[in-house]
Image 1 (cartoon, one colour):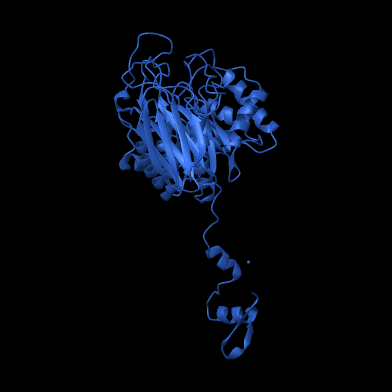
Image 2: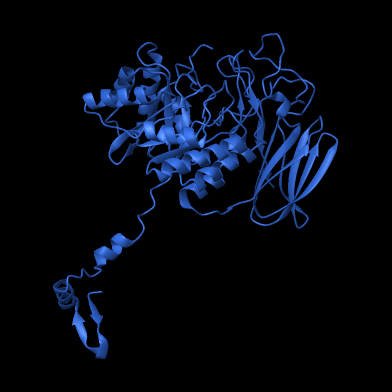
Amino acid sequence: MRRSGKASAADSGRAGGGTQISRRSLTGALLSLGVLPLTPMAKLAAQPAPREPRLVFAHYMVCCPMAGKNATVAQLADEIHQAQSAGVDGFALNCGSWTAEPYYRAIATRMFEAAASLPHPFKLLFSSDGLTPEDTASMVSEFYEHPNMLRYQGKPVLSSYSGDEAWGKAVIAALAGLRRPVVFVPFFFPKGLNKRFTDTNIARLIDENGYADGFFYFGADGTGANLAATSAKIGRAWRNAGKLYMAPVTPFYRGLGPRNYRVFETRGFEGMAREWEAAIAADAQWVEIVTWNDWGESTYVASFGSPRAMDLWDGHWGRLLSHEAYLAASAYYIRWFKTGVKQVESDDLFWFYRLSPKRLPGRDQPDHPPESYPRGFNHLEDRVFLTTFLIAPATLKIESGERRYEFSAPAGAAHVSAEFGQGPQRFSVERNGVTILSGTGAFPIGDDNWGNFNYLAGQARRT
């Protein structure tokens, strides 16, 4: 996960015969019999505890701001504003270094300044990624009292990407030595070669990390169905153990580099929706979108401009495609997660597709030969995927190249797909003979895999 710049209370009652007895007299009588009456305060205590606020964070790669390593406070504030507008409550700042590569500390400092400069609260927490216990403690300690630091029960929250119980205990000890207690919600892989989250391995993680306050599952490299099932299983186990659970939701994964050239089919937004539903079913207190800006693994949801504004950092990760519709489509689930209410508030249509058939090779390093295929490419589906949120039933129409499709779309949230054809991609929603939503994909599907197995996401305009 680590990245370098180079490569989340009736005062009286009635007795029989109509005689009114004061509560004080009744209480005294009951106490004389050794019985404790249910007082208003006891009644209050017997009620279910108030539901903790649900919060949504996004995993932020501190190495790779949208505007580059020299991103200004104002530019970072723009990213925060964008996240807030989508219902994101904070960033989990992934730091793969601290003292050895000082730009991590410099960018994190500007990020805290940016959060403090905005009128609405935005919380930040650190996610230690390969740091020593000493560097982790130093990092947290430096911003320990900052007003924008995420706190739970009065203490700052610390997360991680990877590590183990020995490392975690060393971190807690280092912070205790600095009198800097934290709420610790790490992500650790299970032990063993395949690092699978089996029931036995999850139970072992809980047993070995009883000192931790909770667990974060960094679920990104997998299909939506598998990630959702794993998240629900992990979440239930940690919640049953009386711990916090921070669940993941991720849009899509396609890694780069000779060792990480992998891709997983998440069927447009359908996989991300399943992960939201798993977080809700597991009663997670927090969700962390993984990620906000991991350009190299294509898990980003940040908006970097129009679909044609694709080159960040001088094309360092190749030509990027818009993923902002993944975040826009999450609005329904963010409301549901935070309020417990499933309600579609407006008609919306979102689409997701790759720009070429899976038979065409890509490159594990952008703009560098040779051409090759990522691991898992054979499981991809040559289809367009659509998600609708409708206040009433309607008709969904797809024009994929020369292919035509029509679906009856129900009220609420729904996902459909169709085999794609090469050419322009057009989509519309009609109700009572009137087109209420329509749009065209920013790029056609063709025989040039310049998108390198990435997904293009888009949203219809209201007509």
